[in-house]
Structure formats: C-alpha cells, structure tokens
Length: 315
Image (cartoon, rainbow, N blue to C red):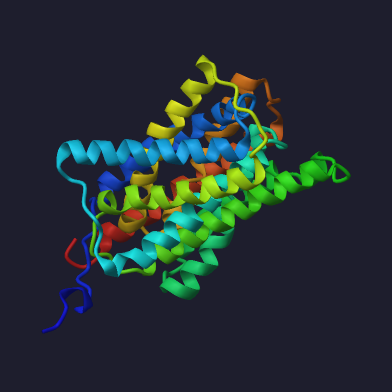
C-alpha cells in the first residue's frame, strides 16, 4: 500500500482572505514598530543572545499552551517539516539573533531601517524564483520605498572606524537577507498544514538555535531581572513573537511577496518615529522625507494590488 505521507501534496488554501491579511498586516506593523525602542531598552538588562532565546522560548511556550488548551495542537505532516525547519532556522532564529546582536551597537531607529531593507532582497527573488510580475505601479512603489530607505540610511552618518558600529550595521543588513529568504522560500512551498499548526514548531526550532548560540556566546553574561526586563520579555514573547510571527507567516501565504515586503516598511517607519519619541533619538528633515517616501511606496503598491484584484477575470 502507498503511504499517505508520500502522496502528491494537496495545497493548503491561504488561511485568510486578502482583506483579512491586510488587517493582520496592520496589526503586525504596529506591534513590531513599537517593539524597536522596547528591544533597545531591554538590551540594557538582557544580553542579546539570551534575549533572543528567552523571547523565542516564551513565544513557543505561549502557542503550545494556547493550542493545547483549545485542542488544536497538531504535529505537522512529514511533507511540511523541511520547510518548517528552514523557516524556524533562517526566517525566525537567525533573523532575531542578528537583530538583537546588531541592535546593541546601533540606534533603534536606524536598526529598524536596516533590518527592513528586505525589499532589496525580495524583489529579485520574487521575480526570478516565483514568477511574480513587476508592474509599473509596483515598480513605482518599490522605487519610492527604496528612495525613502536611501534618504534615511546615510552611511556617512556613522563612524566607520568603530568596529562595533560596522558589525552592528552589517548584522542588521544580514538579518534583512534572512527574512527575505524566508518570504521567497515560503511562497514556493505547497503547504499541507495551516500556519497555526506550523508556527509553534518553527518557534521551537528557532529557540533551540537561540539556546545553542546563547550558551556559546553569552554563557558568562548576567541577566538583570527586574520589572522592566520581565515586561520586555512578556511583550516580546507573546505579542511581538507568538502572535506576530503566526500573523506574518499567514500573510506570506495570502499576499504577493513583493506586497508583503513593501508593506512591512511601515515597521521601520514606526520604529524611527517611536524611537525619537521614547528614546529621544533626533528627528531630522531626512527622517520626515524618508517616512513620506516609504508611506507613499506602500500606498502605491496597495493600490496596485487592489486594481489587479478588481480587474481580474471573475472579480
């Protein structure tokens, strides 16, 4: 007899409508935008690699407990495990490790910006490997978003002679490459399980990687336990990790990769603004111009997708 696990994969439908996916996208942008200054504050008490492990571990535990209580905890089918491992390792584990590492040496606003240079890496990947079209409006939105990044990321504004600053900026750019790789790879996979089935296991894999790195690199570092560090971990573990990662993976399945990556530019925009308000990071003309260009790029891409949906056959 044929093992059902070896049968041709039946695609799991996108878990949300386009409208619901855009709503989730707005929630994630808010949660992650405000989290950049929160993470920067948290690094005062939490060594970066232990921060990563504790955040991912709490996120995994949150989803495992919640799904168990709801009777919805399932082991994903064998067909999906290679992709679960890739997402857990690259898109979640390495991304968050690199972000916390770089954020030690870089202001929160700039760090958010560098980590979300994702469109630079996603667009060629989506065109080459996913066959997505770069329409005129998408191209215009992309150019506007990247112009905003260019205005905000001024390499002349930091000290290249400071090795820690250079490493911090490099790690944040590498984190963007990790996240972009996850976006493209996820879109190529035909899923059998739902995001809610997969995400707890992805977070568990990411937490295991985070633990290995923390033991290797931060074994002698002390965690300062106080009300502030506990609140930072609770926010990061539950909202900014468990809920937000599930939402983003759901969004990746429901919306085009280029659209997702461009809309996510709202996160660094919010991170920059909130870092200025909370951490007293300076607000400059280039900051305001960059935010305007990014917002314009996101709006153009969203309008382009809406037009394509309305003009599609049978719409």
